[in-house]
Image 1 (cartoon, rainbow, N blue to C red):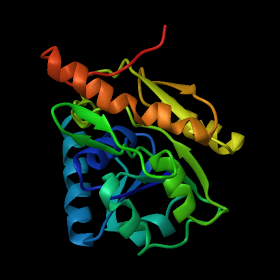
Image 2: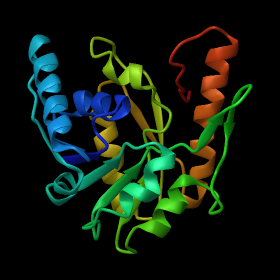
Image 3: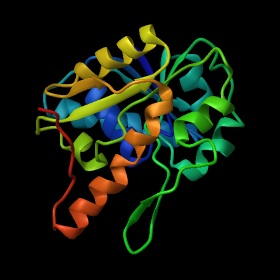
Image 4: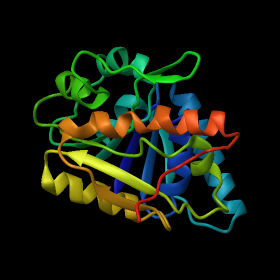
Length: 216
């Protein structure tokens, strides 16, 4: 698969790129193409050091969209609307939202927008032909980057386009020991997004790190 990562120079984007680029063509995007090139070089070097193949390049966010069939929006919630307002070409593309709207107060709190979830807000901002799914919300950046560890984790997927959901689940399942689960329509995304502040609270109050989920 040809996978573009908008905002791919952050911890989440770089980690996902490292996990996917040994099996897929990954295009890391950034507002500054030079930063994306640097991230892609780090990805290539890291995987080469582990004896793994890597197909990864760095470009602007717009070029990452233009060159890819599946686009991952690896951007913080507060940057979603201003970032998407500068980009185009999402028509008929599969777009994955791992975005979790939340705030850190005395504990982590889920703070969805008026639409009810980040995914539904993103749906409003994108062209109607976009095939939007929610996925990757519950995997910590450190887990993505720990390449010598197997990820025995579950990844819930929400979406309204059955064919797009199947492709997203195939992408997830291509990561060793990671298992995708159909979590219903896009309207159910709020239930997936709010798991992340829950996991962060569990980690904080129980002195744990990088807590994930499994279904048995």
